[in-house]
Image 1 (cartoon, helix red, strand yellow):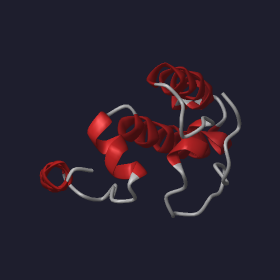
Image 2 (tube, rainbow, N blue to C red):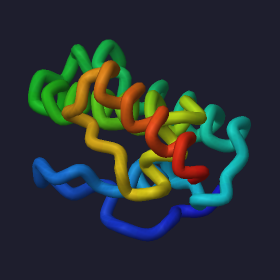
Image 3 (cartoon, rainbow, N blue to C red):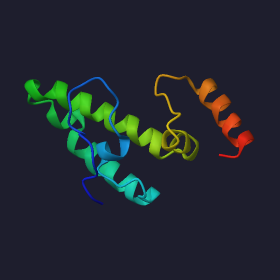
Image 4 (tube, rainbow, N blue to C red):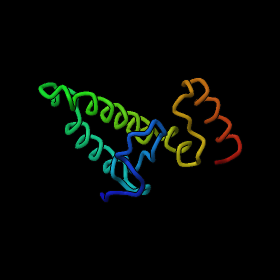
Length: 108
C-alpha cells in the first residue's frame, strides 16, 4: 500500500478521493482496502481519543470519513460507480440501485 495521491487530511467539506483517504492505490485489492481501513479505523476510533476532548472531535470526523470511504470501496457496485465518476455519497440506496441497473444495461 502506498500513500496514494490527493489530500486526504484536508479539513474541507468536499469529498476527497476515497483511495487517498485510505492510503491505497486505485488498483488495490479488496484485502488491501480492508487492511488499510482496519489500520486507520483503529488509529482514529473516537474511543481511543476520549481522554483528549480537544482531539476527539477531529478523530470522530476522520473516523466517519474513513467509514464512508470503506463503505463505498468495499461494495463492488458502489466502487464501480465511484470509479466511473457517477457515485454521489448523498444519494440514497434506491437511487444507487437505479443507477447500477442503468450501468449494467449500457454495459459499463
